[in-house]
Image 1 (spheres, protein in one colour):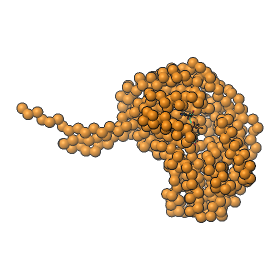
Image 2 (cartoon, protein in one colour):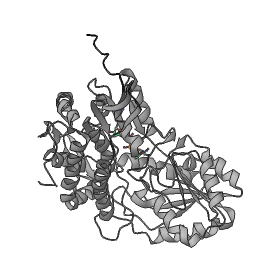
Image 3 (tube, helix red, strand yellow):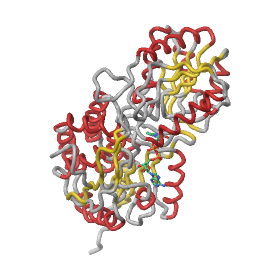
Length: 476
Ligand code: NAD
């Protein structure tokens, strides 16, 4: 299979795509390097119809039989990991080692999901009756993924949906569709036709999918603004949704930390993948006594970090993935500069492509845009605090509640702060640690429902409770 051309959708196990109208840009150059199909409404209908047709046989397989398919999918992805990673770097901009990490991580995720147990509860099993709850698949799942981790976030949906016995129509972001399209083709060789369909298209395709009557559920990752639109569309058909949305994760750094020991972890969590991570550290609250030392360490790292094309060895910071996001990040940067916030910038970025240099904003006011908005780019506001309660109340003063971290040498104090933080995931002396067996759920405006873990699997199933008594004895 060629990885650098012939991008096609996968519908009913076959490559499809009448209209190659979706231009894909390499963000390191700003130049279009490939075209992908722009799905028509007829092609979407065909994808949904094939998923509906495949559902009957797929749901009748046992959990164990479907596990075997997931493991075959893992192997097929791993077999193509290197060329997929190259392609991902080209369309995404991320350094090659990070791209390979995503592809291999997605394969490991399939394996971990395949190890999950089928849920089933027996409430009573006596001579009078057996009362049991079994869990059944929903039907055809509409899976919509963003561009920041296009492969992982697709697999986070596809793996549990398929294990549970659903079939799927998956849509990657129009900004970064190529790797996911190729994975669709790769998996067509290992999955029965129609079980996983992959479609690509422009801005019209998402709403076409969420309003399509053939779906039984919508699983979405993206911005909070789009999440609201998805939920509105789902409400018309009373469809269940799982929404993983935006975040503006705070980190609280207490006065008892070893600055040198934690600086690198905080730097990584704030800037890796050019800060395009939903759970990146996006607001850094630092105790007054260690503020200057940590700021200077982070500034020194920013000055050293190599910015450039992710395909070049040694690069840490690639470009912003797309022009729309680049414009948003630059707008936030200009706003911070225009308001006179103190900016500390790292190594110079190339002048072509969508590059933004690492920027630390030194103690901006709490109500500034750069603190209150999700940057989703390498701009980190860093604020001084004097008391723990001040830090916690500022950290919680956000509509988002995705993740948060606490950096503190006193375990009791750290645990107490963690308890008070309003977020679905809290890390203590670590950050951005996500696992397939651990529920990931945004609080507040960061999400509805759960991905990952046993709770995530349940989002793709509906309970059916069965009460059964022995048949009454026939009088003779
Ligand atoms: P986005 O909301 O613009 O797009 C996400 C996906 O939705 C894309 O595939 C897009 O084509 C599609 N879409 C756009 N409009 C739609 C509509 N009206 N109906 C249905 N689908 C539609 O988000 P993005 O810019 O691709 O991703 C960045 C955002 O995603 C950030 O806010 C980030 O925090 C968030 N994110 C959240 C998580 C999480 O797990 N909570 C993970 C990654 C990213």
